[in-house]
Each structure stands twice: as structure tokens, then as C-alpha cells.
Image 1 (cartoon, helix red, strand yellow):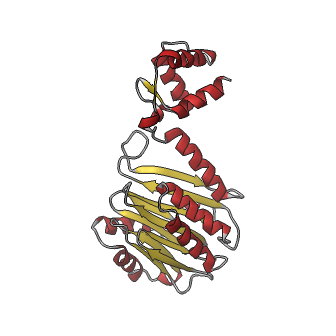
Image 2 (cartoon, helix red, strand yellow):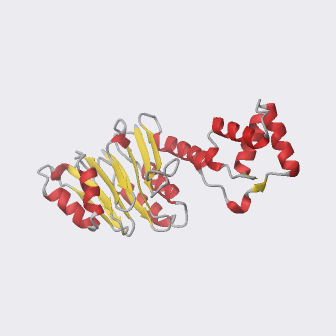
Image 3 (cartoon, helix red, strand yellow):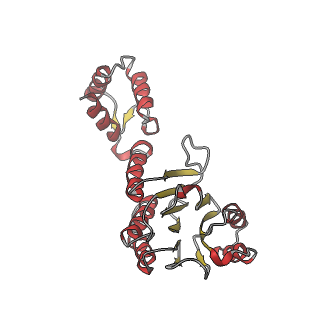
Length: 275
């Protein structure tokens, strides 16, 4: 009752899953991943154990197709299951049991696996695979979103729309740099969940995107005077560095702060707010 893409990005060493469904909180069921191991999507009559068990198998270095074979081979309910896997090397594999409700099927290739069931038709899977291949130069999370959006526009889940999720795993990429959860966005119940995931991703990029070192502005002279004045309008009257830290923490921009310099994204937000 779902369509998803599981994928790997070699440049950033990231694994991800994007999924949508006419099902409440699909992000709590389908997507699983781990940096340095791979990612799994378990759906249709989902066997949730495919997630953690698949990741354990992937962590041993098994290729995606063998992981799929092991998961389904020992499962008496496999005929109604669907699963997609991408391994540590980016090899993709997908499985659709013969009892999955029509239309059901998938495609797998280098770096991805796409699958879906109770879809409007095979065009959904094809559109997702094409979108993934056509956007090879874009950031990984954007490629995932574009593939999901393409499937949605091609008809998606023929029962309708309800939830979506976008999850990405990369070593040390979590807030604060401790865990491997780079992105974890979920829309549990919405009329247009894929569109809403896109809005949330834009906010994630705004707040947590890494500043471009080439665009950072020296926080001195006229710019320092301007920032001090803008912060003062908002009630932040401590010395400049302290005031900027306090304001950025309130606005969730602390990940974009660089000592002695200023991200233009942060400056523009400060200017807009001070107006």
C-alpha cells in the first residue's frame, strides 16, 4: 500500500529512503537504515523485522540481493511482502511477493531500488527510477524527494494520499555530530504529504544546511555595525558575539554560525526579522 525508493550516494557516503502511502505514519514502518551498512524499505504486508534484521545482515558485508533472499527465504508470509535494499557498496535489490495487491512491482539498479504496491500502475515505479537517474548531479536528499514526487505525480498509491517520510543516514551527521541520522522528516497525516515533505526539507536546509565557506562574510566594520543594530532592534543588546549567539539559538540557526564571519542566509533572515 506504498511506494518507496531506497538509495545510496557515493559522494556523501549516505543511505536514504523516501516513501509515501495511503497509510497513517508510514515513516514509522517502512524506512530503515544505518551509515556504513545500507538501507531497507519493508512494505505491503510489512514484516517490520526486515528492517533491523536486514541492517544486521548488511553490516556483515552481504550484498543486497543476498540480504533480500535471506529475509524472504525464511519468511512464510513472503508472498505478500515487498522489500527494497541498498547495500554498503550501493548495490540495489527489490522483491515483490506474488500475492501483493495490483499493481505491484519494482526496479533496482546501481545505487537504488524502487518498489510499490496498490499503485496506479507500472508508470509510478518507472517515473521514480527515471527521476532518480535524471537528477544525478543534485544533492542526495533532493534526488530522493524528486523521485518520490515523480511517483506521486504518476498516480502513486491508487487509494489516495495520507503520509510520507524522508530519512537519510550518514556517519556523524546528526544534530551535534554524534549519531548518523542526517535527515528524519515525517508527515503522518496530510492531504498532500509529499508536497509537505518538500516544505519540511526546505526548512531543514535553511536551519541545518552547512554554510558555503566561499560566501561567508567577515563580521567586521559596517557589517558588524549593521548586525549589532539589527540585533538591538530585536532586544539582543549584549556584545555582538554574545547577542548573535543568543539570537541564533532562539531562531535555530546555531548550526550556521562561524566565529568571526556571517552566513548570508543568516544575515538575510536577521534583516527580514528586524524589519
